[in-house]
Structure formats: C-alpha cells, structure tokens
Image (cartoon, protein in one colour):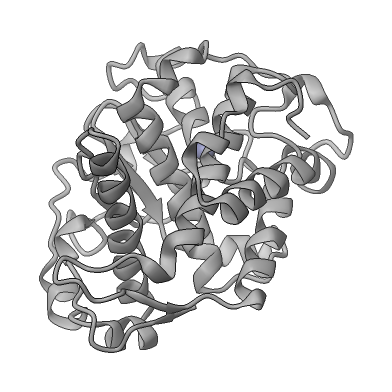
Length: 307
Ligand SMILES: [Zn+2]
C-alpha cells in the first residue's frame, strides 16, 4: 500500500494517549489472552462484569492505569502532514488510513441519505480508561467502544500479530484491522449491533455474524481505498497491491477462532466458543467486501451460508 505523496493528513481523527498520563507501567494482565481482534467481545466482557459502569473484569488491575489520561496530538500534528510522511512513518500511515476509512464511510452514508459521525481512534500504550467501556489493557487487542463511539488500539498489537500470531504483517494488514474496528462503528451507527445478544457464542451466533460483517465492511473500504479522496479532493491511497491483499487474508486467517483455539488456546477447536468466525469465514467475508465494494452485500445476519 502506498500513499499519495501530496495528499494532506488530518491528525484530528486520532487521539494520542501514549505520551501522557505517565506512570502506565508494563502490561496489565487480563486472563485468557489470545483474543485477537476483539472488538465487541471486550464490550461484552466489560458489560457482563461491570454493568457498563466502569468496573474492571476480574484480573484487570486498575491501579496501574493512570487516571485522567490526556490526548496530546502535538507530535502527530508536527510529523504527519502529508502522504509522503505516511509512506515513511507508521504513525502517519495509520492516520492516513483512518482518514481514508472515514472518508469512504462519510461518502457512503451521504449517498444513502444518512450522516456519518466521525469516530476518533485512540492510540494508547499499556492500558486505557475508555469513556464508556471501563478500563482495558493491551492484552485484549484493538476494540471499538460503542458507548463513547471510539476505536482503541495499542500499536504493539501489530507486533503481536507478527510474533505471536505469526502473521506476515504490513501497513495493509494494519489497515484491515482498523477498517474492521470502523466496521463496528458503522454497525453502531446503523443500529446493527443491537441484533446481537450479549455474551452469545457459537458458529451461527449474532456475535460471529457481527464480526464477519465487520470483516466484510473492511473489504468494502479496501475496494474503494484508491478512489477515496481527502477533504481537498486528492486520492489518499495511491496503490493497493496483490501482495497487500494476500497479507490481509493471511492476517484474517490467523485471527480466526479455530486458528486461535488450535495454536494459541487449548489446542482443540470448540465451535461452541466461536465469537468471531473461523479463519476461512473471515477470509471469505473480507473477500466478499473487497470484490463487491458494496456494503449491502455484507448481510451476514440474513444468510444461512456464513461460509
Ligand atoms: Zn470485531
């Protein structure tokens, strides 16, 4: 994936919590682990244990989270001005990617007579106090919090993807992960999230359908990536290669429930515990979005054929 050198970046879509607050030491441990791109799962977890009121699930120690974390975007604003910056700096590439994803959905909502509300992504390190989903540690992976409509990510997850999950990685894999989380934001705006009962799992559960739809939405964005302009009309992403797509499919396979259970969990596949879909299903639905470029083709809730 390559960014258009002179496309301008909008750092206001990111809230950088990494340098602030001080005192966030090391990793906060959350039991279980191996959750991958968790998204809604975290939301359920927090709701189940905390009633949405900000109480931590057992095993998550809040005392190591600094209160009152403040976003400080001054560094991002300084270094991430253009697509050229995105081509040489990971932070800036993520800013550009978020701009592109939200640019696409803004346009799509407008075309269908709706209004897309922008959701910022919070970059955090170690742990974070969300504005509606309680506290979270990096161990849960990137997630979307419907209560405050924000995406949260500790960028060390991308290193985890390569080391623990053995994914090939790369900027387009990072884009896939973010586009998946923004898929959950779209579901929140469209009211789809309400079709899922909290805590349900299984191969045809609402949770799996919601996650596969978010993968499909990520593919839809990828289809439109090189045609999505910045506010001033310049295309933001110049090129998405076959290799980029293959890397995204590789990552999708490595965060499939069966792969995680087999390789990072008990070693046995237990479909009853599926929350995100199998590797093959995640690839299938990302591909469906990518090939059609059409969100209405992501109707995972009204099909008997999830793959
Ligand atoms: Zn998700």
